[in-house]
Image 1 (tube, chains in turn cyan, green):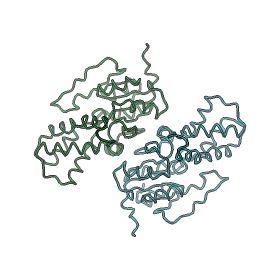
Image 2: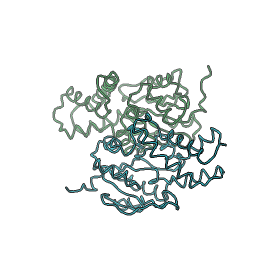
Image 3: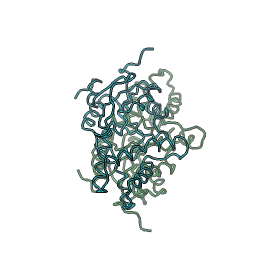
Image 4: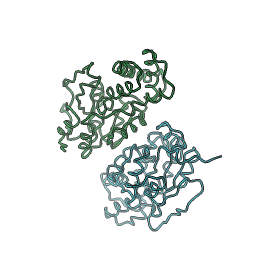
Length: 238
Length: 238
């Protein structure tokens, strides 16, 4: 079978945490700023490590549909206990939980997105809830054409309802959507739904202490070192 | 009971068709451009007149959840028949149906939104589907922070799920949302859910031949002659 052509692509759907914004750096910064006397790196990794299992509980039906803000809070309460922190007020916990709304973009993100917007519909496809993604876009200056979230489809990635939901939202065929992410499992699930895929290298996603394997994998239509590099490969120069 | 203060407002939710974009002028322009030999004004009004009854069929359960693109097409097929037009190809009908994706902003819209974005979360709350609203935003240059649609809540305005859905999306109280529209029924339904409301005068919404009564009504926290005027009244100057 001939692989679909990149010239068919009309919509770019971006994973957000790690791909577009630096969640590790942002969470470490906010944890350190609170002066909790803990290792910010370990705290950030523990918080993020609770993410997939929490979504799995929702998708297994153990929890009803839950926004990621609430999942983050459930995990935060447990991580605070594990790190022996019992001094935070409810207001401080609420503030810390919204650190995920205040993450910064990687240095190449905004310029790359601006170039891509000139030719494509550029949307998010994140498990983060809509309010989180909108706050983050305002904070970080992310120029989305449209914020799409698991919340719209009432399913978390890698559920096919999310990838196929993007195509349905824009009335295009699955191969007319290019899923962009720094996570192999996300891209593999998108390909299984007929989307085309692009991998973005983010070796520091988990910080300098847990370096990621960003080597090219078969199956991806594109492999890029940054979103600016992706724009260049797609012929969207500055 | 003391009315809620405008200083509590954090989110501005905008109706779109008529309030932000000129649907009448846009549809007339596209119908006229197709050279169908019909009165573009009468055609546009007939098409729009089918809108509320079509949504009512969905909300009554007579039709399952249906995107407005599909409702527009159902109405278009009937209006074409009423106007005695049998010559359009399927491709021409699809193109004409997407005229709603290519509407232009009123002259004050973009500047007003830009001013308001500096202080508020500025989102749409339209019965239009997400893809329609995203295409329109790209076409008209509408600088939304976030596109919210009936499609997100699987209910059309004036269903309370839409107005309360905006507050829930952004984790704010209903009175922290200001609903902005040029339609009294939309604003009355929003107020019934506890939102604050602002009316925007759009006397030419239905064209020069069906002038609208835009006189101030009790209940609205604000009444403005344009979105720039609204920004001024909220202290967001240029």
